[in-house]
Image (cartoon, rainbow, N blue to C red; front, side):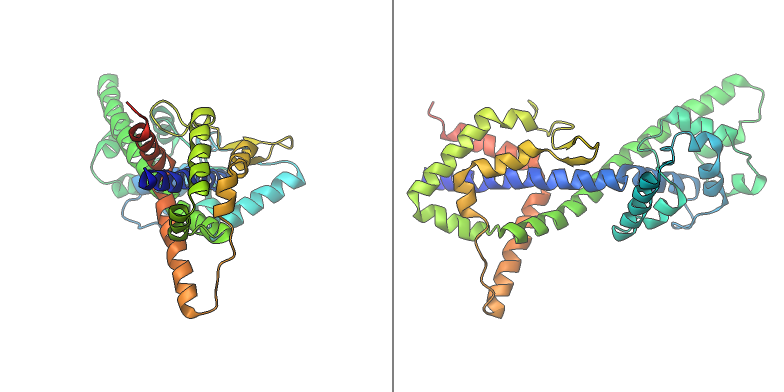
Amino acid sequence: MILLQIAAGLIFILVLFTLLATAIQELIANYISLRGVMLMKTIQHILEPNLKGIRGEVYNSFIKSLSFKQLCRPSSSSAYGRFLDWLEEKTRYIFGYGGIGKAVDGPPSFISAENFAEVLKRLEWKPEYLESIPPGPLRDYLDNLGEQAEDKVQARLSDLKRWYDEVMNATTNWYRRQAQFILIFIGLALAASFNINLMEIGKTLSKDEILRTQLYSDMEKWMAERADTYFDENGQVRQGVLVTQNDKNIIVVDPNLKDDLKQSDAVQQLIGKKASFATVGDWLYNIANWLLTAIFISFGAPFWFDLLRKLVRVAKPV
């Protein structure tokens, strides 16, 4: 029972801080339009797979078309709005997405297969443009755009839509990997800021029965009263619960999440202790523990929440 309480307590702390890290990651992704950036990188690769990230004439023609610009976020008219757009572009450079940000202002987070085909249809396709497209559904559709046989064009269009949807599914997985990469750095920042040393916390819980019992009790209360706020019946994080808009229409971390971190007195006692940096060994020890916490946080809140639910079920008497 002691080992189970220790494990549940550690996982409970990881759940709370992984939720916080995910909320911060959502803020960053929203602010730099990460989904839009990933989408534009994918479309660039679709149109110019042999250029290795260099913008060519086909992609430039696509993003400059009026039908595509209508899918993008409107430009800000106020000085404050233009400043935020400028700041967003500069922030993208910090995270390594500056090229896309400079080429497309306010990229859409999603373009349907129908809209993608419509933009292609309205472009002026030069012979050299078509020659740069490799064989496949996209090339077949473009080759048949000028034909009068409507059935043939529709068949090519259906093939293009199926292929495009498959590519977008792959892009979703790519986005998740990018988000997880950002999550590691956020987790490291949180681990260092709050000095989340899981090894020391585990040692403390093994020696302090009162604190261990209090933490387990706080965990049970949170599971009963607050867990459903963040997780659905499948254990996945609910959409739109980690970040919210304040009275100034600025997206911020949900205040309720920050309150959850404060409401457990046991958690407050276990984190935030001053770390020792007296020797090189102390530095290495602290950094190693923070990295370990960051890696654990990158596993995601659903992973730790599912594990916590299983531990709670084991602990309950039959």
